[in-house]
Length: 212
Ligand code: HEM
Image 1 (cartoon, helix red, strand yellow):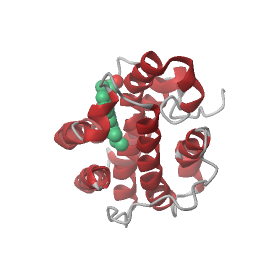
Image 2 (image 1 turned 60 degrees about the horizontal axis):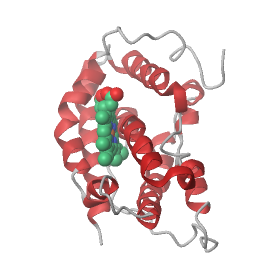
Image 3 (image 1 turned 30 degrees about the vertical axis):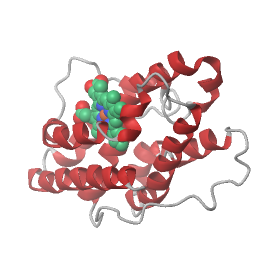
């Protein structure tokens, strides 16, 4: 078994139907996702005069959000859950990317942190938030490609977050889908909570990105 693979990531194929909880999440958060994509930080990514400093600012915003929310998402998980999800923590990848910018010696200590976060007081709500953070790696494929085309070799070492799973992205996503199915498809009553937390997370992230 390769590193990061486990019972939820090692045999999934692309033809399998996603579990109920994942189909519901996709449908019910589509509008929040679209609205987030339309914020200035993401529109700018695809404009011809996009600068490397803007990319740094995008990473810093993400850092301010991930560093605040990830401890809440991964808090109180069981060892079994952590063995499947533990490698999904991404704040270290963002920190690494930010540290690679020249003149960034001031470090991350003074980086603003998001203080308006969704309520994550149950496993269902924690997983709704994780869905949003994990899903950002899917759009990340498009964004990493765009950044490489726009900036060339200068950007290659600064894609640790956006390219975090590399070639394994589909396997990771299928594994996450399968894990979510194993946790929620026989607990349908909890699915509305998962969805509500995912939408709250999109909203908090949106507000954080809109903040001056
Ligand atoms: C310019 C910015 C973005 C673009 C162009 C984009 C694009 C995409 C695309 C194309 C997919 C579908 C990929 C696939 O099915 O293989 C996707 C999925 C997703 N993205 Fe984004 N995205 C962006 C930003 C974000 C951000 C900032 C987040 C959250 C932090 C996010 C969360 C998600 C989620 C949760 C999914 C999974 C949807 C599902 O259930 O299938 N995206 N995105």
